[in-house]
Length: 98
Image (cartoon, rainbow, N blue to C red; front, side, top):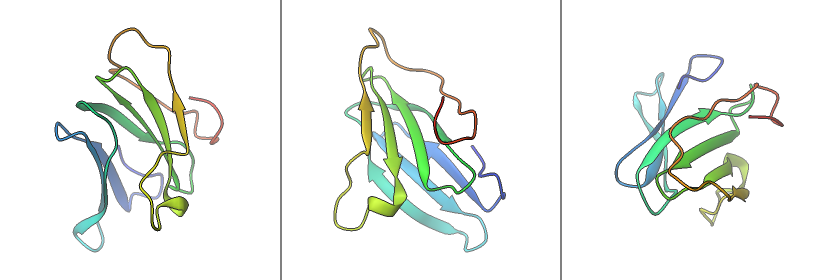
């Protein structure tokens, strides 16, 4: 998914990671091992681009705050309860609901 300003792309991968690609710098600006299985879906949660949502075959949805990545690659929140892998996630763009 593209960020609202069009400067970045966030992507999930089969290596259990989330990638944020900076289009202006033409490089990966962030990579984090996010799940224990394929990351099927990702999106930015708000216009700032600081909050990222992810869903995976490990049945979890996770919230990532890029401002907290210094020194630790842990999610800001984990939402459990799905019985199968999460294949789609979308945000209202307000940083609260998805």
